[in-house]
Length: 610
Image (cartoon, rainbow, N blue to C red; front, side):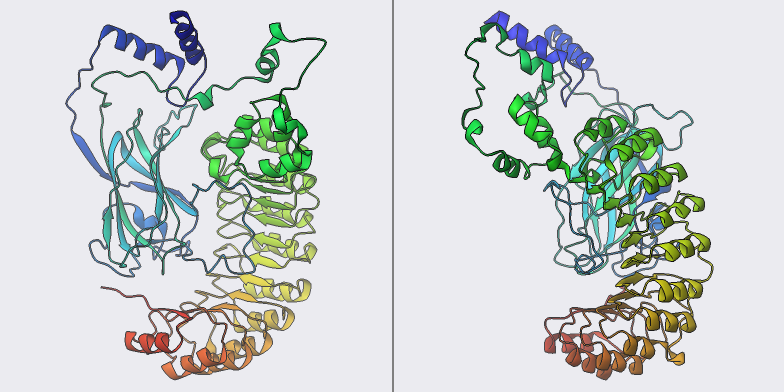
């Protein structure tokens, strides 16, 4: 019995488990055997506000101001403990499920783990690396969106970054909906980690919230000396981590194998049709599929079948993905059609070599490629995509804000594109005009917050001439679209169902551009005229008369719309689901309550400031 236990202990130390390396296990064993106890140094707890916002996936604000931007999370609180809608807070781009309901939203990827809830993120750098004892988030409006808090071993302010960047989850949970939108101080119980950190990442999911969540500040509490357990403990060995190589599996039972009467030993699996086993395995997540592949030769064959990898979302594993990971998957993904690499590869985890090798082997059948917030991308990567993915129809480069302007010229070679997301990128006018010249099959285009495009009227004119089948167009915060460009756009792209003109200050209702828009786009389902103070009753009445399929309308900030015109709109548009009248001076809470009572199926939004 002692011999068996010794053998098992040796095997455990021979392999890496989740909770410790071989060296850690040996050190812990010696500590236990000698009865050693740790002597804890007295360490003072340090409180820090974020020094710098390092990265984020989206924000409501513009790239050229501070209002509603993620940069407001740096430093001391601006608003807390006050509650309400304040421009000095950090606000993400979306909330609820309204964006997911639109035709421009891509279908979800299969195999996404049920525990992965994250939709947006922000990364914050702090002055001093500490061993975290607490993290506090000051939420000032519609709290409950935070679903994960992580710490990183990388010091963003150090001149000598580590070769191995490691992320640890301090806390995770599910999205919640609080009873009130009032401010709160969110301080969950966090896990203790064995390295100091001054880089935190918050991940959020706003799908349950009734309006935009707003964050004011983040506090990192911690000690500079590593806290030790009072007694060293053996690391817990998880049997699922004791993986066997294919060679070891083939040797199991070798001395006892009957060479004349070999049996497969797979039980009822030998009697099941191949297709049925494939169907069963299609419900497993990627890590489960990889573990199952190590159980026997039959299931290894099934788990490595390229038909299991026609869709692959690696976004949930962004913190662990590397060139080696892609290399391991490469032989299995020869039939890959949809690939999600969003959030992956940052801080050196993926390189041009690893990405290029994977795309050259697996890009031929690719029709959808999600690369949101992939900061490893460079011009060479984009050239590889254009060369290896001839049939690509969907490309998402949202918030790839470190990709230089020249890289976007390669997109024009992807002539079959139907959906292109360039939100918060550095694309310039020459590149977007080239794309519109050659990619005439575009159905969905997002140019939100693309501040380097000099003349949106020229872009609108090109869209009208080349992309007449366009269904959705996002021009959020474009600064120079005029009524002339808008008139050309709606006259040429009459198939438009979604149009976002939020925070486009150069459009003026007095020119009649919004009424012409309504008359030209009878299929319109979503229209955002956010923060355009000139929208008036005549515009609303024209929408009521011409856009009977309207579902989402945002007229936040207008001073010229009355309750009477809104009532006419609600009566004429039976499919209306969302109406945002926040900061509309003629629409007070009493009017909102009356309209909500008369039209209970419509979510009428009216934010407040305490």
